[in-house]
Image (cartoon, rainbow, N blue to C red; front, top):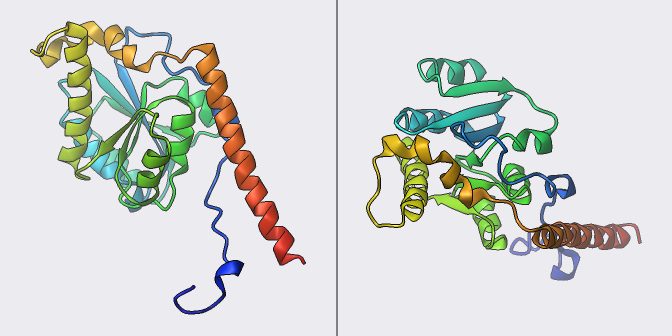
Length: 237
């Protein structure tokens, strides 16, 4: 807009996007039933943009790991994605979910394989809930990784089915190595035996840390709202 001289610089204010995530700050970062397989969640609109087709193909490459994936949402690719996962019993479709904070309680990590993403509400919600996030490195997701440097965000550098599978596998390989206390990995087939240990990476923050995180989100929300109020005040003058 500035290059085309549509308005002067003093009339242009960047506010960015925001989401009131206070409801997510109280979500426990790990589940109580740690003996079951590691549970991944992907949620959103079933569209080409979201890359769920790539994630399903990636799950086909991870069948040797005790990992399950639930996909929540709906959209034009519903039937196509269901057909694609027909022979993968570790994948479930759970329909549209209205209460996302409660939904996130049941999962260890969220996967966001978007091909493009202007902002990415799924990411900011998952980070606020203190979940591990596997996400592609595109657009607004890159910005969020930079903004929330302390969050547990694992980047998917190669946005292909192979790249997604390798990112997930390598993360849990590293967790397994830390648990074993040596550089040598145990066979992946034994990962099920250490599911409880693997989830040490998802342990909840202390009450003080959780309080600080909640306060940080509230302050960011207040800053965004203040910027919008300033914009509206100028427009209505």
